[in-house]
Amino acid sequence: METTLARGLKDVILDTTESSYIDGEVGILLYRGYSIHDLAEHSNFEEVVYLLRAGATGEERRRDPVDL
Image (cartoon, rainbow, N blue to C red; front, side):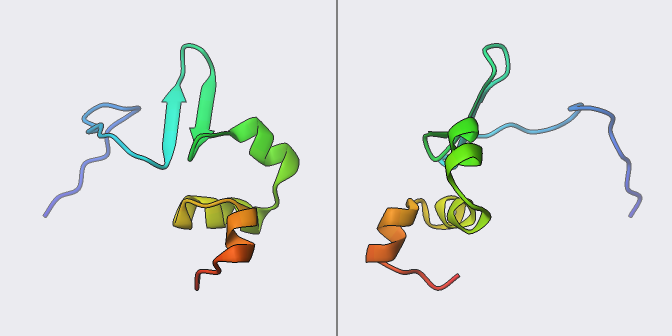
């Protein structure tokens, strides 16, 4: 089977997701409803990973740990 690489977003299929929201025209990037700027400023790597995987914040993690 031959693999062909497309440049840019050519032939990329779009779908909906609950983990992120992007509005490139306005400059918005949200992960699980949280601004990427707020996450970068106020969260560490582990908290962001937990948020993306479990859909919960660090505070919720302390109450209900999930095995990552």
